Length: 298
Image (tube, rainbow, N blue to C red; front, side, top):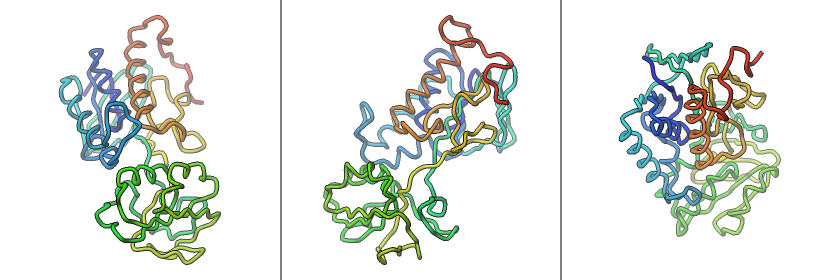
């Protein structure tokens, strides 16, 4: 199968790349391993930093409808990538169903996933301990209860804004280095912030120090890059654009730990698609046409 652009990842960045590609007449194939596009935004009940949208599901539904209306994007959900092979004139992406997609450029937009407790450097926890991410928590089960929220990452503020009348007590141990993330929720009486240099999870609902106990527990530790096979990783596991093959473009949260927002992901996905469009046409000022040695990792 061939296309003008192959996009790996169907979140905000990947969908923006597909929509922008269609806007300039490029045919794209968008590959997403989940069953639906924009899965993470669908779990965000309240948005206050995305132009034109107030809920994540509303944003996700609009994105899916816009892509379906273009007629220039083939969407393949429920499939993953097993190989990424950039060459002089094209990139070949092999999928786990055995098929291949070949295009002049590939956009990598697989984003990030939640950090597991055992992988956080400030937490001692069994390797098989699983906590549901806070952004997947069902508020219907919170009324009148105490929840242990491990970590003070941004979804905590989103959860509280989305449910301002919810009667819940949140115990939030977090490393002191993350204190800056707590500014927006520090005054909420439902939250007890617990700066903790070292946390030991002795079970799914208990933690030390202090013998913390709760009715339910959720992970809110942060994000880790979900880099696809074949991408060039930096020391932190992210995929800096400058390290990739010239025909591999990185967009969205996969680029680095800073600026992880829906709006920045959309912008970077748009930029990646337009870069592919202009460089294939050798438009002046759009960047040099890729060569065999340009920025190639050694």
